[in-house]
Image 1 (cartoon, rainbow, N blue to C red):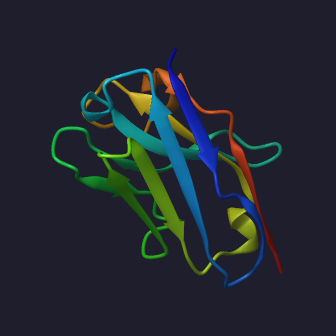
Image 2: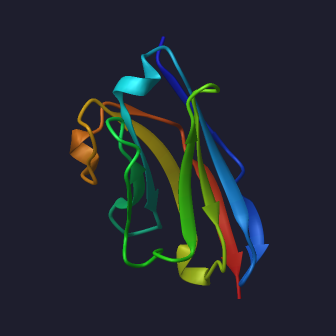
Length: 123
């Protein structure tokens, strides 16, 4: 059974940090790109970051570039999203997902999804 389990969300003040984790199981981790997406109330799901399965290259949305860092521990089948200098506009449910493509920022190109973890940044 494929599972992606996010953890690490919570409530933090503006300027603070959180580290999200995405633990994967049930598929060949090395063959999948892992992406982080977020969805705020009333807004569409947006791609935040992804890490390529082929060469470990990374992508960041402009809104998080320089503040967020994605990393992968293939021995643990886990991807992390370190979020620093958090802003109230980062408030959303954060999802991790796995894509069979080398990398993608399009939600429709992801095959498996976690249940999401809430991140709330207070001003």
